[in-house]
Image 1 (tube, one colour):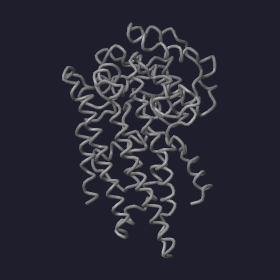
Image 2 (image 1 turned 90 degrees about the horizontal axis):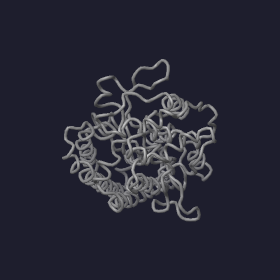
Image 3 (image 1 turned 45 degrees about the vertical axis):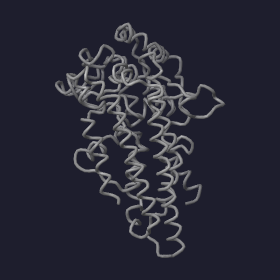
Image 4 (image 1 turned 120 degrees about the vertical axis):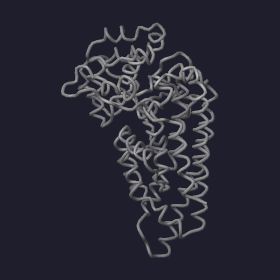
Length: 396
């Protein structure tokens, strides 16, 4: 594939050569008429501590969002409104969660989400992929040189580190996404010996880069412990990532978007690692097919991704030549097995993080709905183990 064709596909799928699925140049400020959104988001840790989030938002005007024009500004608006909604709903804890989102947030949140083709709730695409700014503009794009724009609910830096460290894993995946595109461009069946060799080389290189990236991501995931204590995560800000499908929302059919005409209560999942296009891209490129409830959940979470990233996964599902070529090359099979080894190691590390940051902490919170389910709505321990265990049938 020529560089021009790669550039076209990267643009089509909104993938950055330097930061992958992360939004490359996120807006950090909206026009002055939206200042109230940013001001309350900036004050959110203090408002949460004083239990005055709802009072502050109650004084906020309903602002017409139709003047927001650029894609980057739309993503910023979604981030700010997701922060406001999460603060309003969850600041007093699960037992006092709000049954509705007030019109000052609900109306623009619904409109902005429709324009972006995504959901009006906290998602990975918002809290992580479009939520960063550089501390030193001349320095590297890396977690230690980044700070969050919004979605901060406590003063502890761990709140920021959770999302910045996750963004670092996304950034680390940028090179392999390009190699996947190169390999998929050579996915057609060829009979010419030189073309076959080029095809095998492209696929093998993509697999080798993927294995290296997965090992790097495992180390980055392990670094979560450097600046985030498990108790700070669980008791400090985890609830703000929850969706509207369990507890009171299950009973009333979802959450009510006040002031949005023609809809009833709406059920949405919260933020989930399953919304990461990088992890699903690895599965799609390798040809890993999950089964049953796990497969259904992963497919549903694609609806919480940017539409362009969802289309990229569908592109990989159609075009990946990996499974077709595996029987034809021992070298390729070796690279594939290395990838699967690395993916199992990553999944194991993820399970260990969950055990430390959620399972060990929930002993003091056993009657909570959120204690039993991930913020994305799954029974998370069984889900993660099923995803990992399914990998073993694909190799060795």
